[in-house]
Amino acid sequence: MKKDWRKYPSHQKEYKTTYMRNYRRSMNPEKKEIYLKKGRAMRNKHKVKYNISNKQRMANVYDKNLKLWSGFIPPEAICPICNKKLIFITKDKKTSMHFDHRNEGKEIIKISPKHWLRKTIRTPQTEKLWESCNFGILCEQCNVRLPTINRKEFLIKALEYTNL
Image (cartoon, rainbow, N blue to C red; front, side, top):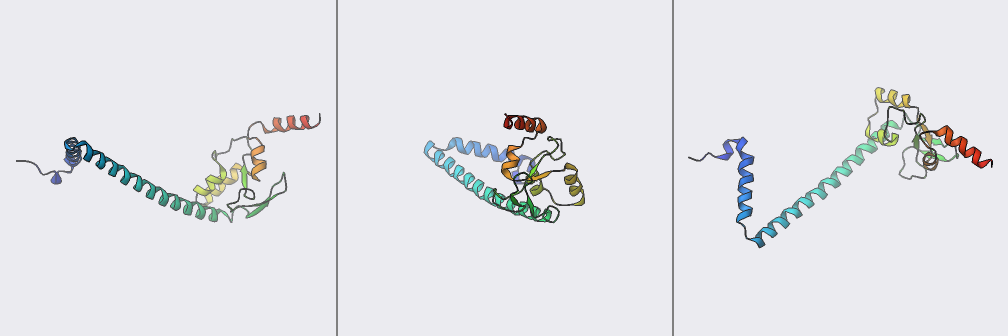
């Protein structure tokens, strides 16, 4: 007597894979191609749908976390190098705050500080962690131009070059 696969879950996957393998082998080539195309189309449709909803969900989480940090980090600041007005929560890169690794990248937070803020919920422990890193607030252009490692040597060489 044959065992019913529904009663034995451990055999369920094995039963399905062997059944589908035999089913695909028995198909004629034209029908098999249609079957495979339909399967690919369904998988792609599901991927697109899932990725869009996941991106929207993560964007909402990131925005919510940044709003939590807005009381701790000043909403507005001025770049100490070029005196440009900066805004903490904005989509415009020209006026957005960028955080500078002052200690040559030896901070506990190794990733982009803004990205860390977006991913991390504000708690007293995360506030202490942020304060221990001592990030500077700069505009995008100044932050990109100023190197993280060997900063003092870079500035000394730049001054020597301008005094030639």
